[in-house]
Length: 303
Figure 1 (cartoon, one colour):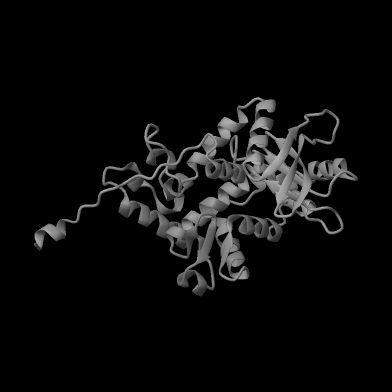
Figure 2 (cartoon, helix red, strand yellow; figure 1 turned 180 degrees about the horizontal axis):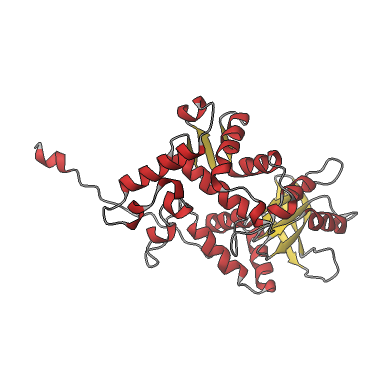
């Protein structure tokens, strides 16, 4: 039996998503939801490492994302800002979760918004799949015009570019990111057998400055706790500050290890956070403000 088959289906994530949001006070980040659902579902590190297709998302993150999309269509939760979700009054009031009812509601809502000729109208509510719940984001943007910033499609495409880079080029990119984020004297060492340490930088903060070791892992999967322990071990006696950058993701165990009591805390930057950093720093990513025109026919009819 594959690990993929041991991960619950999308609709089974409806209830834990709503439960976690209630536990968090009515709102939470995607990361908080993911961590708590994984903890309550007792998902192993191996299960959390299973990628959806070739990544960049893990299978659990992928199914949780579609669960949130369904619950949004059901009007139980809303996306209040990028990466932050909140319960609606309807979601707060829900006492029991009927998976079939939610799937049927979403399917009917999709049918109502689809063109009459669409083959999606022929789909039965009980056979809802991720592609039935929402349109493929790839179909909503023009390659020549760019990708909407509020979609995750641009992150997937940017990660593909990053993972295609040569290892030394990726290290230079991380060096550039650190420099433009306030680090000084950033050096790439790239020494073999150095516990994965790829370089060192000095972070200047007001009157203080301190050395930070960093590791850059151009990776498609999930970084586990062992990699964090190895990195910290290589830092012992040299610095208390470490930064781990990857194009992949970090397992819950890796995050817990990074902030373990009694050990120097490590800062982690996963693939999505790296993409957002590159966009904010305008490194290989350009954003444009697009002016749109809205015509109001009623204005003209009432003049």
